[in-house]
View 1 (cartoon, rainbow, N blue to C red):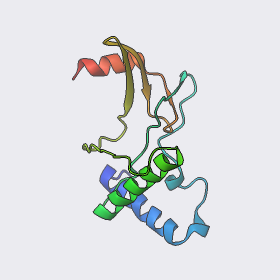
View 2 (cartoon, rainbow, N blue to C red):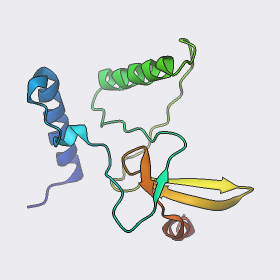
View 3 (tube, rainbow, N blue to C red):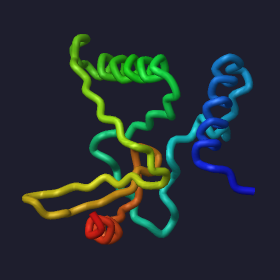
Length: 134
């Protein structure tokens, strides 16, 4: 049985809310404890220079504000000044599509999937093909 991406996101959000109310029931294999996925075997791993954070689906303004607080806490813990300005960009969510591209002197030199946010898999050839459609 298949369900829509929106329904799946809604169910994951409901699970997250339940786990926040009952943290003793959080398990390591819960979908709320995973970001993206680990690189598949057979592909070279690519470490991201900048962490590829996940928004964890925000369904309300309060959840967007909570995300902002987490970002600012992370920046403060990293030694950034407390009044650092943060800017955000929002786009429509397209499940399964997140590629980090690296250019040097205008040439594509690397492409990697998001993976778990820290490590993805190399995808330069696929990235080049995808860019051709833009």
